[in-house]
Length: 96
Image 1 (cartoon, one colour):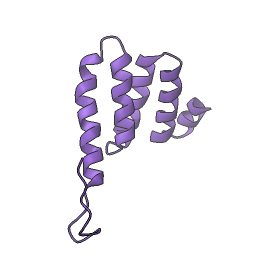
Image 2 (spheres, rainbow, N blue to C red):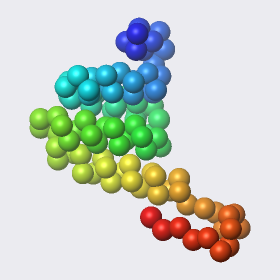
Image 3 (cartoon, rainbow, N blue to C red):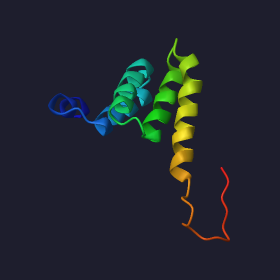
Image 4 (cartoon, rainbow, N blue to C red):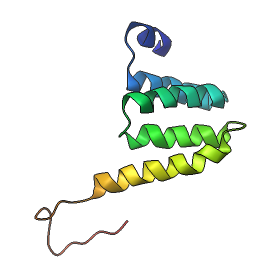
């Protein structure tokens, strides 16, 4: 079904869904390809980038790319967690 969706219209979530299927069936290189396409279409999505790092970690020959990709995903999460000045409770502080 995901492949059919992608034939009709490339969509980052459909690529990610297919990447998850490939990952959990042990096809890590195919999984990485799907997550790469999802990241290409939606580069600011930390979940897609984190999943790509997981696929790299388990793909033979791609482990070296995993660390940098994890770091990119973490940077995106940290950016999303930042609270602009003037928002939130002044008595509450968060650290990541």
